Length: 63
Image 1 (cartoon, one colour):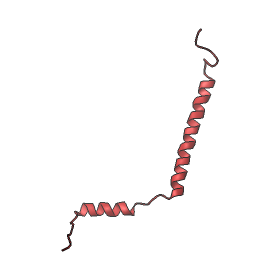
Image 2 (cartoon, rainbow, N blue to C red):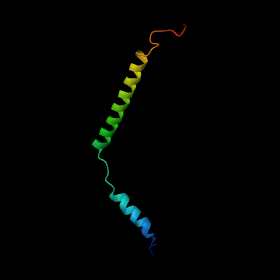
Image 3 (cartoon, one colour):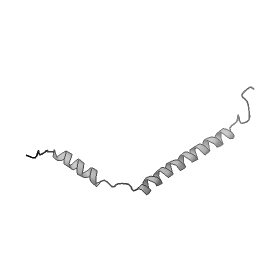
Image 4 (cartoon, helix red, strand yellow):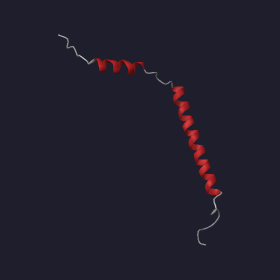
């Protein structure tokens, strides 16, 4: 005899909603990743500029 698993209404709705959620396409994921990397590059470039143009640029720290 086949075993019947009963689920609560809440669990059934949760499963249905999870399946209906829009899945991101590969291109969308890649675009998001590229945006994150661009932001990181901009952050690192800004940090590099701050370090190069800081008041202590070119000093050895032995004043």
